[in-house]
Image (cartoon, rainbow, N blue to C red; front, side, top):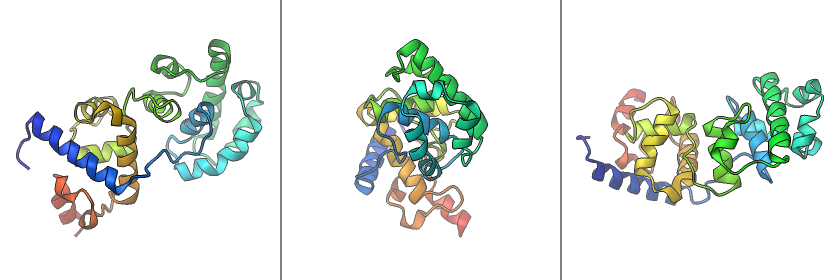
Length: 222
């Protein structure tokens, strides 16, 4: 693909958005939750773990610990035992408890709806904060950049960066703010269902004409 102008890339990004919207009209966060605290806990657990595995663990976890105070007051070993099926469960249990202690002490046990307060919580980075803000509070304050979003953003040549913060900054140039949360869902769904890391389904891809990497990827897996 010849070098794009900013206007051309913005136009192509718009066509990608429309194609993904059409392909995945029901795209949503695939972590199960019923309130901001549950989503915060589930997202912390999801680091280096599949949403499917997290969803197997959280029903009983949420039943045992319905409030931030419950996590804060929990026996640390018992809390770790409850999430033992999750990778890095001991470290995640410590972060969850520390985050909930801070929620109780500084926020009355309520998950705050602002970026600065969220990223100040132990175990919470910008990606987790964006998940919570976008899906629990319907606030488009950023774009979630997980492994799928990072991979597809590079394959689609919407960025050449590898750092998640810089990838997010690049995507914000091309994606209208009201679509920031949905855009991450569309890319994640596409990454899980079509554009895999090792075996991308380029021949059947709904956005193949808009992807500068398609022909090279087809040649690689042929």
